[in-house]
Image (cartoon, rainbow, N blue to C red; front, side, top):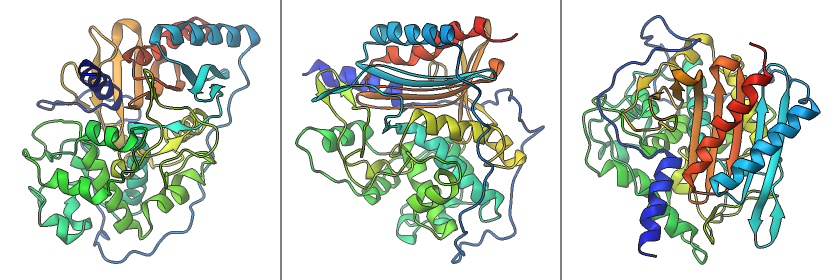
Amino acid sequence: MKNGPSFLLVLFLTGALLLSGCALSPVPDSSPSPSGVITLTSSSTSPGAPTPNPTPTLPLPPPLPPPAPAAVAQNLQEVLEENLKIAGSPGIVAQVVTPEWSWSGAAGIAGRNPEAPADVGMRFRIASVTKTLVAAAVLTLLQDGKLALDQPAANWLPSRWVEKMPNRDQVTLRHLLQHTSGLSTYPVYDWFLQTHSSSSTLVIPPERAVLEALNGTASAPGSKWEYNNAGFLLLSYVLEKASGLPYDLYLQRTLFQPLGMDDTLVPTGPIIDGPHMRCLAGVVDYTDGDMGWARGAGDLISTVEDLNAFHRALRAGSVLKPEVLAEMFRFLDTPEGQMRFIKPGGSAGYGLGYERQAKTSLGITLEGHSGGVLGSLTFLYYWVEKDTYFCYNVNTSDPGGQFIVLRLAEAIRPLLSP
């Protein structure tokens, strides 16, 4: 076991995107994109007691295209099964939505004890893909005039935390959303192991994670990009203060319910209810355990169909106004070697809870987010050049799982109109 944890740590950091950074530089944006930096402000951003909003009525995601032709569906199923073996994953669930057709598939097993086949409707831990949904929720408060991107985050946090917060007057909501706050974070890998071992009933309160981050070594806000789970934990509390609703209820009313995401939820305990993909790292099952300490950063549970529905609605403008969506999609270059599974020669950037990975030579630009915990990797991406959405979950920590999106793209490209 001496070599096992360090090896799994590398895999976990790859999947969960717990990355280091360096100096920032802008990356050219894709549509929609701002002509310059937009500073969105509001005349009503005082952190007084807000009036909770009723459940909004959002346009539903665009209807799914018809099912893929039988030959296409068979081809994609074969790609899934072949690459499942290459990735070393016990199972996979996936959905692809193109402008012309949609396809959902599964292969392998969801879990071992008892052994059950993977099914496309199964839930799973989405890990850091949580950040995109939380960012969208925070940005709805921005467009409602309750927040401003360049406002100090401390305005919306409890005073007992603000007193300990480095650079409290300089760390803005934009910094938290963009991983440029300079704040420290908490020991994700260690805490996941502690809360998800087979006999663990340990619960780590979110406040402990907050204090762990605020008491750590900080750098100047905006000086570098460095992936930070604690920033999104803080954003979950900003969301509560600005909306007047609990974190889980605001997500439910603002995103899950209006968009018909019936299988997406904030967990209230260690168990995933209903049929689900297990988190399998080698012979160890890491599925069950407390995720409260990952609140806002990696705690959500969902399905491939719900996540694609959200992603399609987001990009269609059903969730955010164009000028706010443009801010979300304003990407900063991320450090060489970070988040770049399209190698060699790829490039990557990060917006507000939203990332880009591109390789010009392949004609592939992917925008969305990925995430991982031990034994589970999730990928939610939009293929810009082909107007195509991918979402899949593999119950493994093997980094080979991240390349399945590229293999699916290779299989799909000749099947789509130029």
